Image (cartoon, rainbow, N blue to C red):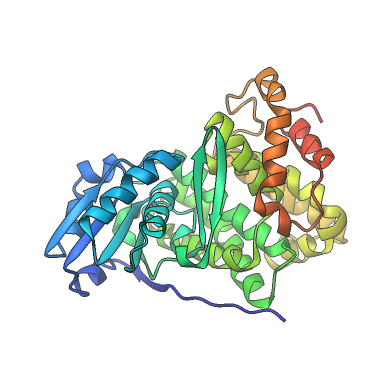
Amino acid sequence: MTDFSCETKIIMGSGAVSAIAERNFERLMIVSDPFFAKNGWAERLGKSAKAYEIFDKVAPDPSVALVAEGTARVQAFQPDAMVALGGGSAMDCAKAMAYFSGLSFPLIAVPTTSGSGSEVTDFAILTHDGVKHPLVDRKLRPKIAILEEELLAGMPPSLIADSGFDILAHALEAWASQNANPITDALAMEAFRTASSLLNASFEGDKGVRLEVHIASAMAGLAFTQAGLGLCHALSHALGGQFHVPHGRLNAILLPSVLTSNSQIAGAKYADLARKIGLGGANDAMAVRNLKNALVRLRTALKLPGTLTQAGIAPEELFAKADAIVSAALADPCCATNPVPVTAQTVHAVLREVTGRG
């Protein structure tokens, strides 16, 4: 037996943020990074309530210590709603602050990047002592997700590329997951098709496609929060905790190699996706190769690195930490739904390939 639930109300389009003011909150906590505090967006949303407080200390890969500081602020302010404004790190931080506060209020997610899908998921990622720890609980799922088109216009190309490959990784891993079902498959397939076909246009400056990519990110989030992820994300978390390379960039490096690794079991499923999105393939092996090559071509078009070395991680430093990275990846809950059982040998093999030593 399988089930599917979508408890998050999704509001999308130009002017979608007006939905916050329409709810007439008394006390609103805004969680954002310093950028959105300085450019006025945090205050703009806060002013929709009678009283508001802005916690603007969010940094990439939010730490347990930062969340503890934010949680104390939440408990002191006693909001009747919280707004997470920003990218995946702001979402993770706000979710954890709300969760650990012990208070009951709706969490409203306003993503400003198209990639994490965190606005509709049960996941938050916290970092402690160089290790990323996924927090997974249904209570982390926001009550409302606002996909505001106006927030997408100023995204720089590098951010579009990094976050865009996170969409592809979410969709592809959900598609191949052991827990996939017909509904997650439909969401994952459409998210992958949309992102793979429109990311380059967005990267090149076409603002007209960005809302579609933004929606695809949420669709991929809906898919993976129900179906689960896999080795790509487990290893990306492990590497990101050690080296602080952007998460989506790591996914871009890892995803083609993980696809190859999983093809012994998931080849037919990958081939099905390749054909569904028009990549063809006279047989399954060719279709899988077409899918992998399409990922590599897009990665190149988006000017993303193809190896960890190109991403700034020295091979000698990587292999000095290899055992810790492999242990962290194996302990990551994302491995549980990978289509192929993940072993230390599997992880080492992928690491060798993505450093050019395969």
